[in-house]
Image (cartoon, rainbow, N blue to C red; front, side, top):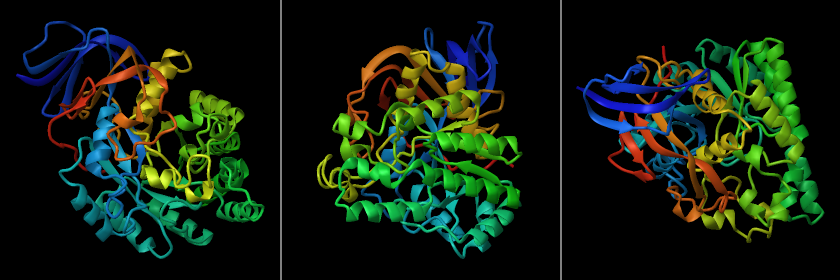
Length: 453
């Protein structure tokens, strides 16, 4: 008797969609079957009228532990992920202490163990002086590395340029990838000081202090370094038209560079900070820009320049986000908001609107991240022997995003009140149903994921 069968659904891959049944046993996909003579199973989910996707991945979350658990922790963050149809997350290293050593990695793993509803991986951070940790961290099980080229939460400075190249040469030996928060710090700090000296405190001052040229400079530099070091590169949360073009050129020149963007850069506009009176609710780094940048990001997503979607789930307390009210002093507010629970319905709404196919959505929200961070073929598809991770969605189900019902500790989002068409109805992790029709249940069964050998 098998553990689980998902029957009668439309099974979606990047290449095709067809009616069939997913057979899962011992946490793994046994097979995709099209004939209806099914074996017995402990549980059968009838997915008639629903679409059955490979377990969706959010490769960019900040679950804030250890050290910042008052904002979020893995129990609440992973519960939000499960509620949102996400089966695997990859957590960022700007915690306290930063995930910069093998000791810090193991301490974080111990802290999280037994407390996650979905599977998870960890990034390590590259800082000045920790090049000797790169190979040991790979052996310990990190999925990749991160460098903060621009100022962000935690204020972890990047190494000097020469040290980055040397570190990436070492990293290339591991086969792992380094992601970059790509903003030039010199440009940001100069413009912010200039704007503050002018008395600017309005929401758009944040956008003006982090212009597209700051992102373009950092992306250009990172691609140049990756070429020199012969290393793999990811541009995190790309926000600009200039960035899309630079990544496109980098790929064409032979650099192994991938790019990630998020729903907020595709669906919001910088002017919404004022036009919709969202102010500090929309403060994020890099900032949300104009419609022209969003259009370029959409083109990049559809033509394969951007291969990954991630949310940059960045929870803060209400007081940190609204330190001086939404339209008050923008410099006092923290950057970021929770996104892991809202991303799937927001993007399914774009599928319903015809802006991208469901097949392409699977490619960028499941396969892309799995391939980028060494989890393929264990994650990211429904092939024989893959983990039994499944996200079942109802493309006709409608709803409204309500920040007060979010499972995250953070209850503030600029997407509050958005109408959505298309919602996750089951989240299945290695054959365990962790969310059913909006209700997260059972015990935390998430496991630490290491790259596939």
